[in-house]
Image (tube, rainbow, N blue to C red):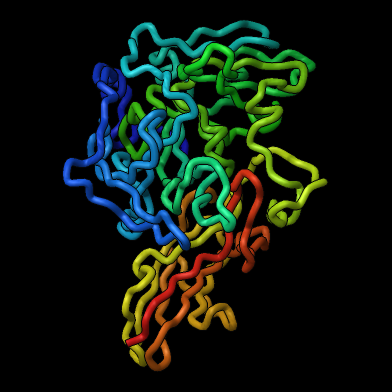
Length: 412
């Protein structure tokens, strides 16, 4: 986390306000005309998805759904650097009814509820009226890698690309709440955006944090991403950033903050996004009688990014494996590689620490034995000494998947 004593390179207040005139975009998309596809290596299939390049401010993306837009980051992007480019940062919306044209002059962020004074903040108020800071953090969908659940479960069939890492620029939520003044008795803070349900009786998408979490100094109202303004599909003009927590809390097009004196009863906080209250949130298919709790913090994960399923790797010759890891809601302590299907593990060398909540690159040398099928595995252990499990994660909604990743190769 870094405070700004001066303007950061690439995102000045003048440039930010001036650039807001580009907020009008046509959200009309189709798959790439050549119908390029990608294989997600799903046992039993279907395993392929179409690649699209047709979404505004987005490059080459895996198309999971058109309405609302669900765009997955192609996995090869993660081998190119620790931060995900804005034009390939994954996209996920709950409702298709969100603005494609934002009047930045009239836009206001409202802070209301159990406060001493209701605030109606313009973008200029936010950019010029509060201290700014940067933080690196992974934005990951709670349903990331759901496509690999066995047996399969309903929901967006994300592979491993419904996660992205960025440097976020914004202001502390705490500072904004303190400006409004929190009255005694406040217990939660609820957040809403400009997206609206497509059906009249459907619940608006809202999420809440405890008052202590909201005021911890890490939760951010972001207007910048990797030194540029937020792309429209990633929440322009403002987005809530909750470092270390699932992306479902990262409200896009944030325009409403309400301080509550009682537990939030809206569907998305009180009922939706639940997992079994069991170790690793996993149960056996068909099992019943377990308590359900909300998804909250991310779990540790790690990936090999330069070697893929089906690749040929020379036998008897040193080879390089590299990849990324993140610790969930704390830092990465170590990343280990196995070349014998998990029987033994060797430590890897960690790259630069970009911050507690961001990706950490890793790399190591390994030598495969004589030819044939081989299984590579990678495991992250975080600074809380929590390691990825070596057994399949399964729950009815397909949330919080963080099983050790395996890559099947041929030693030649």
